[in-house]
Image (cartoon, rainbow, N blue to C red; front, side, top):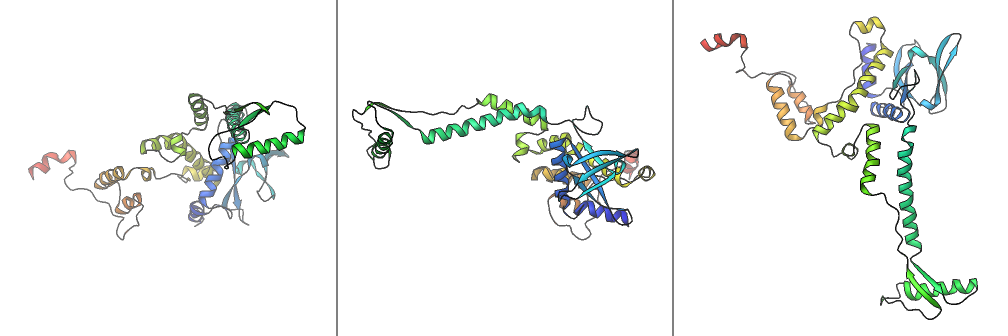
Length: 320
């Protein structure tokens, strides 16, 4: 049926250019950068939905023609198209002043400028430290060419690998020679952590998530705070694009979710699978999936331990 075909489309390849991983990654990236993401349905010759395509927000705009609203958009390859507003899937965050678009991320510019200035200062300090290590003051006036010749001679005699004794010697041509200790300006650790925390707080993430060193509890918190709201909105957007009000009333919907048990430690997985399997919540194959193992034949049956008794039958079971 068309419904099962669309299910496969969303599971594997929503459009000819993207598999599902790339499709979801693209939507999440555009939403994080622009705080608005548009998704349009791809239609076949009978105007039935055959797939979905995420749009670049900066290449999309709403226009009104003869009293009807349309979204005019441009594909990555440069082709242009338009679609009725009511057909467009729209995800937003940080939405305040505009009814259709989320706010920009301009409020993060001061923090990002601080990070950029810190990086520039470090780079410049490294460059200076690598190029100018000593300052020598000549005791007499020389022509520019003589100064260059003397610089090369001094470097070769005192600063090259040929000076394996480690002793610098210079004559009365110089009043003094001193080493330059070039140190780049570096924000102290407490200030740097505050800058990073500002970024993490704004985007709803943390260092452990970014570096893939989170615990199962940290992942659960991140899932509930960041992933689950995104998945919920994805489901609503795709459901509204695919089904009319009557079809949704009969329970038709698109649902995005992730297997949260995959991120547990092996001991936590074992305990969870054991407890849920004994109570009939999981089948053999569902338990195997949590451990990334292949399913087995007849692995879809559910089992419950026999010693469990219905509370309404406690007296009768005891008598038997």
